[in-house]
Length: 415
Image 1: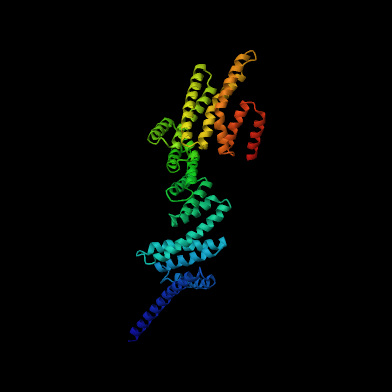
Image 2: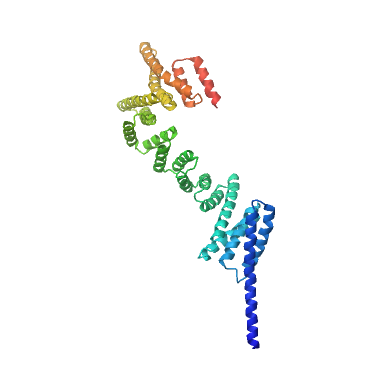
């Protein structure tokens, strides 16, 4: 009877000890709940509850009976995460973060039924916010690789948060981690992010920095589908198409689109740009070519392409007379042959005065054809260096000293 009594007493002691430790878990939970209830409205009342929750969870975590329970891990992750977020000193907050993060992993591993999912979800969000704050400080101090890792933790916790995606991509870009930057920016343009137009531009640049012209072209083409009036996108698409030997495909596609939509000024402008850039390329090749026949063939092709470009720009202006880019580009392709005539005349020897006078008369007539478009472009955008320089070229061709000085001053005032 005595043995039975002793065994009963021992079992009672073991049960009481277990209850005591589980009581610490209850204590930790109730105090953590109080902290959550007060932390926004009454922070001064919240911290004592968080302190009490930490004391209780530390006791539960130190006892072999409760140390490995899913609830212990879940509570520790939530309580320590809250501590880390409220601690503004990195030397002391980071160990708290690490302890919370480790407990979170163990909680997810052991909580097969998901009984404490609410606790772990909350802990994850708090830890993510800690990493967000940490990432901002790292970014501000130029620690871009560290900032990328911190922001990426936050992004994984909130995968649809456009700010999280943007911060992660931006930090990766500054860290020259182009693959990660491209991944995040590619995701961002599929969301409703308000700055998507700028992100498309950045993403194009990222691919080009990584020497991936094919992906850059694909990106800028997608960007144009959403932002057809963006002239930079259009220029980039054309430039990359030329680089990849796909200008004919682009031109064919654009001309087909014009046939289907003859009132779309952007399509005319795009076709004009293809012809214009082709003409510029042919002109550059002609300068490097020594063979006279080959040089003349290139110059003829340049003239033909510039004529086609002018036709397209005029069509765009017919749709919208105030289309700045079309007016400026038309002025350029019309004045370009005038410059060639002017320069060729200037190279004639003094013995050929008659030929010189005839060439100059022809050049000046061509300059006059360009004048209205050059003036219109400056009128539409008086702060455009390109438009002002084109107009300056006109006045130089006309040898108009007064207006040369005037335009030079306008250009200088822009700097």
